[in-house]
Image (cartoon, rainbow, N blue to C red):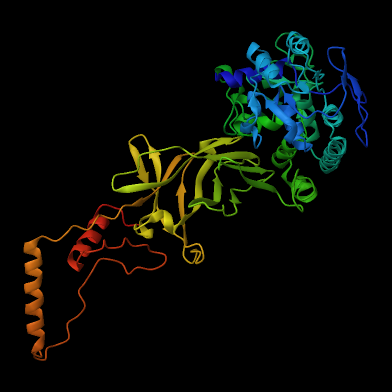
Length: 563
């Protein structure tokens, strides 16, 4: 089991980040200081003024700060908040309960530390003993708790208005969903996460019920393997699950890459309706595992699968979180280091998502567009495109740009292919032929060339920029390179003499008009006629027509001619 996933599973079992009980933090129209709130340790925590720097010790607190427009105040984040755009520019303080987390948080000296209930009281005490102001949240038991936690966070950090707005939007979205599924037939649903499930008094239970499902973990008393009640998170009694016969399995992307019903120990789940009909849905861990505003995205994703008609008729266009003018949310952000963050949310049952990026000033090589073709339903995901560093180019070529692709909420197997559109300034090519620019994919044996097409009519006459497109599978490391033109060799004395003699003979022969002959047909050639859509390698300067033709034939034979 992957260490990171195991730790995440433990965190969910212990509890989930949430606010004090509903109503403990009244929403305020305007933030006023000092503010005092009693936290999960029973401590009256006073924040004297809006904090300039905040450390979040869990991803849901970081997500909430991002969603209420307070991201700029965040100085430190946990390891699991890396999916948020710009998280790599924050200081990573670890996973929570460790001496390293304490040391790194103290070193930052933040004005406020936001801690989940999964952070031990001893860790909170260490931070407070160092003079830091720490607010520890209570467990979130339902969606109301998430809404109230959003408002409370706004009060603590000085973003009351935007926090209230985001909480109000969350409330409105949930109302729309509940109304849409009010009269549907509710299928039996089972949440499965590393052998655990979520019963009553958990926000995951409310996600299932709000989406129009019937959570079997709340209906069968003996489903808890330890014999306890059905409250909270607990190990599963597999026999009871089979007897309950769920129609759907809900999985977590921290454990599963694709929507496949697990067979269970000794194939015990193979008798369920869900297994026989292959009914499973994978929800993004950054939504379903985090009691924060994006929980509504997990609900919407589940409604799309359980009740597609209700979604299409009553939810689509009204609910998508963060949508712009009712459209699905796709954002492309270029960070200060030149890397790209491509985020998609609520894209629904689509198999293609496009990200367009503005031209970057003074860039000689630039990514302008990335199209993602999906093989599975992944309505919410993030891709990062970073510089891959210095890489040796294939023999006979010169490297122009390198990059590597990574993902969050999406796996390489979820992607059929990525299509890149790249712009290259002529100044970067030098004397090289623009039509020999090729994108290569890293393989175990070296670089494999990809079919690379120069886009017709995409040259910018002002900046003298050429634009290319190429397609790659999965999440690869890539290299853009151009063929180096061979240096022209100086002619030898014998060659010069021969050329002079040939020129003289030619001049003499042409002085006498030739006898009339039949018109000769053009010489046959296998070389296609160059067009905008069929790039052709250029001849090196100083080569004669026979040599140039030989070079073209060699290129064709070696597969370097792109069709």
